[in-house]
Amino acid sequence: MKIYTSYFAMMRHFPENILPIAICAKPPMWYEGAVYKKLAPTYSILMDYKSNPDVDSYTERFCKDILNNLDASTVIKELEQIADGKDVALLCFEKPSDFCHRQLVAKWLNNNNYNVTEFTRP
Image (cartoon, rainbow, N blue to C red; front, side):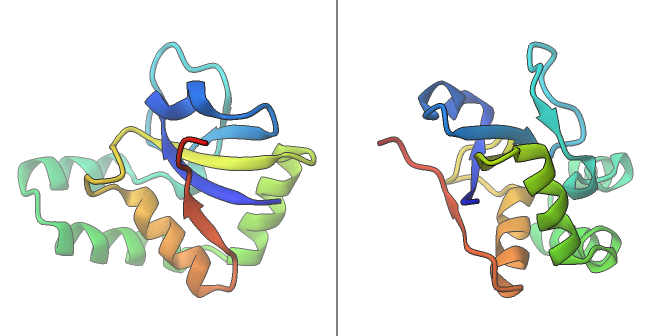
């Protein structure tokens, strides 16, 4: 299974072998696909970031409260079960040029020996 990160607006460019999986706190109302909440920021983390948009503080808190409490191999196994043989794209809202927690998730998975890249249009 290949693992990509991406954002909802890019979904229309995914080939059929890539399953979108939302990892945000709340997917768009129109989204009817798979969701994996274990990699989503909490409401508290999001509200703190909205009141004080400090990337370093957000990163520290997301890592401490979310990623440090997960086992990467378990996350991969669960994503493989959801994917059912397909590649996956872990989705959030922000464009690749904007800060997003999916970048933290990708770095964490890469640091745990799982290759994750941002999906780019073919």
